[in-house]
Amino acid sequence: MYCVCKAHVEIALEMFVDEYEDAPDVVDLKETHFANWDPPPRCERCEAPATYLVV
Image (tube, rainbow, N blue to C red; front, top):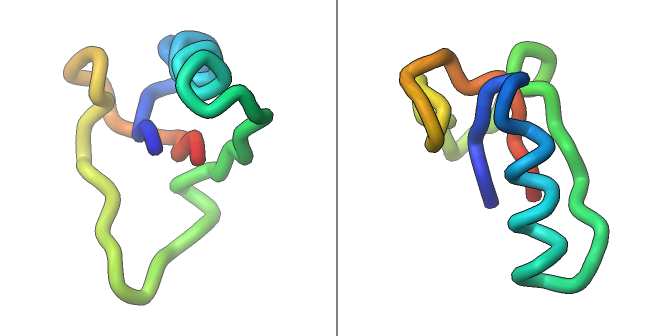
């Protein structure tokens, strides 16, 4: 699972496929809210706001 900004979504997709050998789902964090989990406010690769969840 990766929380990334728009600039790093391709890298997260590649990392997911390399690790799990399966296609991930991409969730827009601006449109989706989780009951028991708060996404990190920042991208895992830079300081930009996290906008996508690759899972």
